[in-house]
Length: 221
Ligand code: AMP
Image 1 (spheres, rainbow, N blue to C red):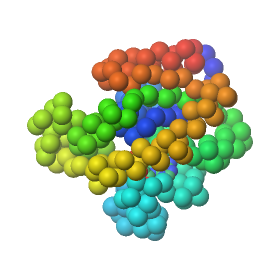
Image 2 (tube, rainbow, N blue to C red):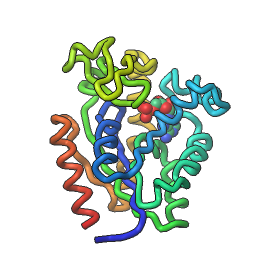
Image 3 (cartoon, protein in one colour):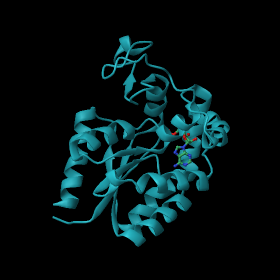
Image 4 (cartoon, rainbow, N blue to C red):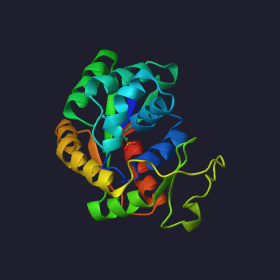
């Protein structure tokens, strides 16, 4: 068994299911799930300085500037619950963020495993436009598969589900475009480092999860 801190980086386009998978892995490994999208949405709700700076970028589907997100991640990774390992969901999203993270990991000896959840654009558009999210616990539901969830309640905590402002057709198109031009090059980046493994995300949740667990075991046992 390898020792040291392990960073599991979830890569993939919006709607691929990386958030849901990250939550499941987090429960299985007892590693914190760090979603920069969730953290930014919380800052927005709380009206913090960061939230005010990030708002317009997020609502249009653009990326929030690297320096703001990098600083937020440094603070989060310094917390005690990250000492054994953690799951990054939605970060890094640019080559510059990936390099920033690498310089941080070099200093403190963190190993990296990046897992790419791969799904085609047509499926992503369908999934994102029927996605309902719990604003309290972050759990996501697909109203096309579970019709009661459109305007319904979270089955974990009972909160009324909402549709994210950036899950509208226009913003989805922009987010996919941003993904293909700015974030997808990270796949190559991590492939070159030998730390990238892809899984087919167009399968039932539990199957995708099974593949991911197998990958993590293969790299950590
Ligand atoms: P997500 O929930 O991961 O889809 O993120 C929602 C939005 O938050 C994105 O469309 C971006 O505007 C912003 N965001 C989240 N993570 C990052 C990041 N690593 N870099 C820049 N912007 C981000």
